[in-house]
Amino acid sequence: MSDSSDPRDQGDDDQFDGIVDEATDRDPDLAVIEAGSRTLRAMTGPPQGDPVPSRPEDPEVDRALREVENELATRWGETKLEPSVKRIAALMDVLGEPQRAYPSIHITGTNGKTSTARMIESLLGAFDLRTGRYTSPHVQTITERISLDGAPIDPERFIETYQDVKPYVEMVDAREEYRLSFFEVLTGMAYAAFADAPVDVAVVEVGMGGTWDATNVIDASVAVVTPIDLDHTDRLGSTTGEIAGEKSGVIKQDATVILAQQPVDAAQVLLKKAVEADATVAREGMEFGVTAREVAVGGQQLTLRGLGGEYEGVFLPLYGAHQAHNAAVALAAVEAFFGIGAQHARTLDIDTVRRAFAQVASPGRLEVVRSSPTVVLDAAHNPHGARATAEAVTESFGFSRLIGVVSTSADKDARGLLEAFEPIFAEIVITSNSNPRATDPDALAALAVEVFGEDRVVVEPRLDDAIEAAITLAEEEGEYAGGGVLVTGSIFTVGDARLLLKRG
Image 1 (cartoon, one colour):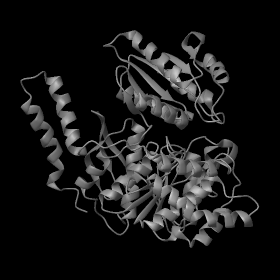
Image 2 (cartoon, helix red, strand yellow; image 1 turned 180 degrees about the vertical axis):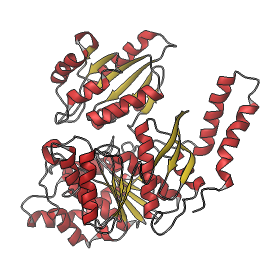
Image 3 (cartoon, rainbow, N blue to C red; image 1 turned 180 degrees about the horizontal axis):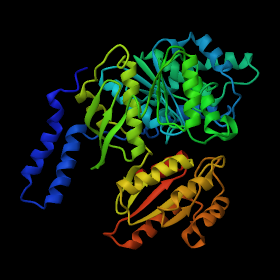
Image 4 (spheres, rainbow, N blue to C red; image 1 turned 90 degrees about the vertical axis):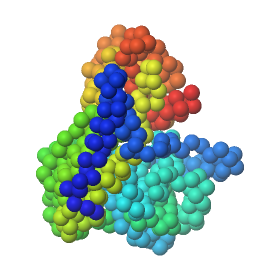
């Protein structure tokens, strides 16, 4: 850690200016663009591999992994719940309480949880801590959900962990009224894998809610609440205040609570819970926040105000104001974990913070997977997320003609999502994804016609056909025009599209 007045803070600006000066004989605009690109490459180091793993190349390992996936699939899915931590607590007990072997940062909220978790993980890793990260759902492969040191555990370790916990899972199954669910078993696997590693800190994203979520058998010293909005209203409540009541269950006695900007009723509920738990609260916009942001080549340049001071010149290779706010929340969470703002009145080392943020990746979150025309994937699945995505696309890409490819899940507010995207889509291609809960394309198309009008809606039930149709529509502007495609509506839609486009 160091004081924020470190003279090295100006290093990146000097490097950028130097590169621009070297290119004075070229078109000034091109010189600036190239300088930005070269500066960002220098900041982020060598190109990173795909953060999303593919299927195992070894056919025997792939077969064994599929056996595990098939066994897990016999259990309750993630949308079928019995609101209780009784079963997961019983599993932790017979496993020897692995979740107590390390400190944790617990993340709840409606949108932004996974991106925030990845940023927290990157920051902690940059400060030489061994991390475990548990997030859901996965984009392509189940092993993504459990990460060690910033990378998904390999399939062999995933299989081994499952085999290790399986006898204990079966023991709990025999005792309880209901078998452990898919998500409960995965949560047990994650906590066991983290203890076995062992990790210095676990970064844990709730599956749904907070109070009775399977992850909530940890006593996290830092609780993070990303923006709360309406989602899973049939289970969590019909207002943001009611939803906040469920999510406030992650706030434990004497913890530090990092609150993103919240609706008023949600903030009131969360603050009341914090008072009851004697927790320390840091609020975005008051104790920390985004001081400045500018669109940059491949992302955005930020000035963040943390709990201990200001951090300038932070490059984030993700698009949109919402990701800047996620970065502020992540930074405050890590500062709180290190005791900054309470025991220590100083900033984290600025160069380390810059390096950590510059290495962040969040697959399926405004992820560019193709050019000519540009194809972007985003996992927005509710109106709040769709509005943030629409604003980010408008700000960061400047498409002259944008075609949407949309498939939603049947339990989501599809109309609200379509209304959020209507202003930015010239046309929309309605399709389906591989998830059994995908909305019927004809039913979704009927909603889309009401929102967009019949002339702007195309239906292609197969996702590969839908993407091809959207690319054709985007190319109508010509080779050098600004046409683009946004594939969105569900993490499952994004995962399927990612497989198709990466493979292609």
